[in-house]
Image (cartoon, rainbow, N blue to C red; front, side, top):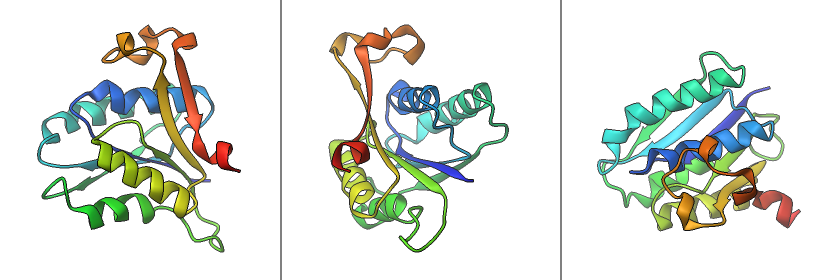
Length: 158
């Protein structure tokens, strides 16, 4: 079965990739990744794309499809909502498992991702919580596991 990971770009690649690594560690290894980008972060997309491929390969998925949704402006709210809503199948549809990651990106993008994930019924709505700002900017493998918590808001609300 297809597993989608839907997330947002950031000027901090580790904040985009670390939640994916945590999810893979927890057993959620996507077959497809959908990444939202905009002009202010486009310079980081190639790096994040390479890191996504390396992570999914390390967890046994070869050739993970990585699709980029490019916004013309970061405040194209309709396209942001569409980016998160469109991959989520209707209740009657036997579509893919969808995980929305709200960790990276601007606050308004995370808020939209959270709302869309909950409202439209994503299977998972993840947030990687670091218990200290001391770990911000570090790669997941260098952060003590006791300092991380992969929160799935769908589990909290079910």
